Amino acid sequence: MAVSAPHSLLTCHADSVDLALREARQAAPDGALIAEIAEGVLLLNVPFAQLAEAWRAKPPIFARHLCPATTTLPLPSLDDAETLLILLQNACREALLPHLAPYVPFSVQTRVFDAAVPLKPFAVNTALAALVSAAPLEVRQPQQVISVAIGRLNGQPTAWLGLSAVADNLSSWAGGARRFKHEAGRISRSEFKLLEALEVFRLSTPARGDALDLGAAPGGWTHVLRERGMSVTAVDPAALDPRLLSDPAVRYKRMTAEAFLPTARESYDLIVNDMRLDARASARLTVAYRRLLKAEGWALITLKLPHSERLSALESALESLERAYRIAGARQLFHNRSEVTVHLRPR
Ligand SMILES: C[S@@+](CC[C@H](N)C(=O)[O-])C[C@H]1O[C@@H](n2cnc3c(N)ncnc32)[C@H](O)[C@@H]1O
Image (cartoon, rainbow, N blue to C red; front, side, top):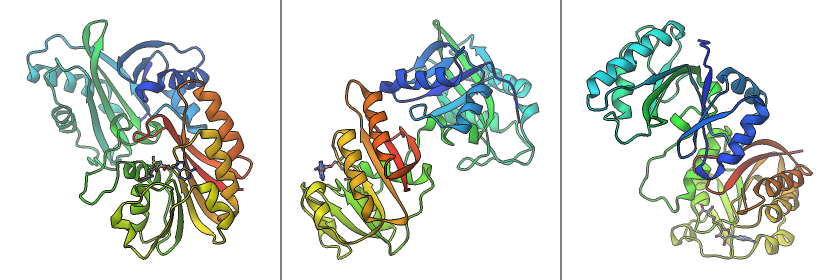
C-alpha cells in the first residue's frame, strides 16, 4: 500500500493552525507550509511518510487529520463535471491503484473546498470507487483510504490525491470530521463531544457501572452515560435538564465540584469533567478527585484553553494531571472548540 507522497495535507481547527504547524515542524523540522488551501487545511512540503511515522510513535494533539498528496493535479476546466471526473479517475488509476492492497477494505474520501468546482464529494467518491475491483469498499471502517482534496493553489483550481493506511491518517473520517446523527431526545450538542471521545480513545462504559459527571449541566454527557446503562452522579450548580431529574439512576448534586468533593464517599468506574473552568484549575480539581476513581477506571477531561498563552496553559494542566494519572491520550477533537480532550488512567 506504500506509495510515496512528497506533500501532506494536514487538517486542524481553524484557530489552532499555529499549534498544528508547530507539531508538524517538530516531526519534520525541514518541512514548510506551502499554502492553507481552506480554513485549517494545510498543504505542507513534507513527505507524508515522515509525519505518519513520527505521529505513529507520538500522536499530535492539534493535528486532527493527515493524508498524503501523491499527485497534484491542476484542473483545467471548471464547467464540465464529466471531464473533471475523468481526469481524477485517470490520475487515480495511474498513481494510486497499482499500490492499493488487494482484499483490504478501502474507501474514497473527498473534500471539495472550492465552491466554483462543479463536483460534489459523493460524485468523486463514487467515480473513483468504481475503478476498484481488487478490494472491498467499506465506507465506515476502511483500512486504506484514497484521499482527494480539491481547492485552489495560487488561484489555480487543483486536486490532490493520495493513498494511505487509515491508521496513518490520525482519523478514519475525511478531514477528521466525525459527524453524528442529530437524534431527537439529545439534551445538548456537547453529547457529540463525549461520543467522539469514547470512539477515538476506544473507551468502554461498563453497563451498570457508576459514573461521576463534573460540570454536568444541562446534562448531555449524563444522558450519553445513562443511554449506556450507567448510574450517574451529576454535579453542577446550574440546572440539569428536567428529563434527567425524574430518572432514579441520576443523582443530581446541585453544587460546585469543589463543594461536592469533601462530602463524597463513593468510588466510580469513570469520572468525566467538562467544567467550564480555567484549564489549570480544572486539572488540579481532577487530581484531587483521583481518590474517587477505581484503580481500573478511567477519567476524561476537557481542558478549556485561554485566548492567549494556550500552549503554556495546556502544558501546565497536563503536567499537574500527570501527578495522579497517566495521560493515555490528548486530542483536539472535531467537536472540541477552544479545548482539548484528555483521556486519563490512574497511576
Ligand atoms: C460546557 S458546560 C457542560 C456541558 C455538559 N457536559 C453537557 O453535556 O451538557 C460546563 C458546565 O460547567 C459548570 N461548571 C463551571 N464551574 C464549575 C464548578 N466549579 N463545579 C461544577 N460545575 C461547574 C457550568 O455550570 C456548566 O454547566
